[in-house]
Image (cartoon, rainbow, N blue to C red; front, side, top):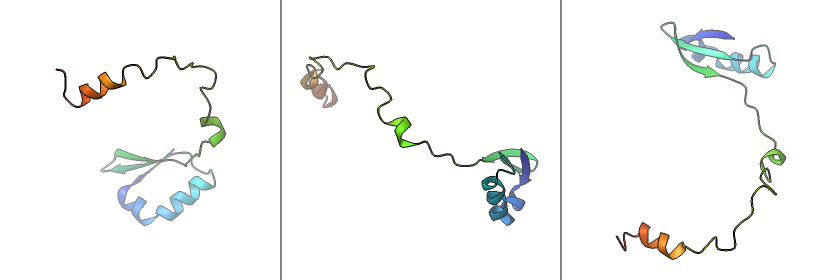
Length: 81
C-alpha cells in the first residue's frame, strides 16, 4: 500500500494507474493534509458466468406468486387505505 497526496495523485495519475496495472501496488491511498480520503485500487471484472444463474435451483416460484398483485398495486396508488 502506498500513500500519495492529492497534488501528487493529480500530477502522476497515469503513473499510479500504470503501477496498479503492473501489480507493483495493490492499493494507492490518496491523502489530503496527511489524512486518507480515497483509495485507488485495480478494477477486477467479475466474469459473467459467475453472476448469471448463481441461484438456479435454490428457489422455487410459488404457484400463487402473482396472487396479491392487484392489492399491492392499490397500495402503491394510495387506494384502500
